Amino acid sequence: METARADSDAFEILKPPLESPGIPRKIVPPSHLSTLNSDILILPGYGGSGPAHWQTLWEQAHPEFRRVEEGDWDHPDCKEWVASLQSAVHVSGPNTILVAHSLACLQVVHWAIGASPTRLSVRGALLVAVPDPDAAVFPEVARSFGPVPTARLPFPSLVVGSVNDPYATPAFTEACAEAWGSRLQSIGAAGHVNASSGLGRWDAGLKLLEELKAV
Image (spheres, one colour):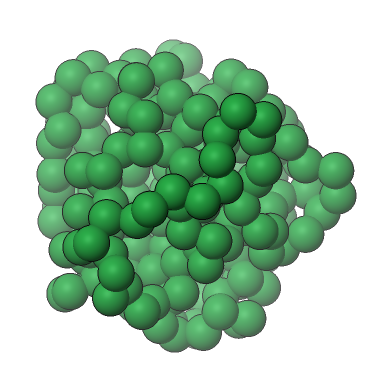
């Protein structure tokens, strides 16, 4: 979860990469992503992903990546976020890979296997730092995202967790991956895998995205 709200002047389902002073829009992409031919949708969590977040840096390095914008990042409503994802995937098509952080991971699973699961398909999902709605630090305003659906996801997925994430224990992360039929990848002590984690562009995450694309 991000404490700083991402810049957003209006509600747009698909938004081009965020421009930020002092951060170049174009970064030479790693060679291992040069053949990535899937549509990538970036899904930030509660509060949005600010200028130093790896999701924003990925968008700036890869202008073809598109962020799914929400109407209100600070007062998230699960039904509204699921509807925005449905609209975005309807536009991007079945070759889409979802890149979700934090609360957006719950957005993805509610969209895919919740009470009213989508009939649309995607190529896969990278689910980073899945938060536990029962955790004491989970935002009260996001309670509509609980409980967590526990059916198997109908597409390949990779859950990435940190051993010292304040929003989820390793046991919770492992249980989610097992229930969803996801591959599980621990990246050690990386907090909530956000801007505060000091990951920068997080090239290791880009490699995980390439591995998911190859499934």
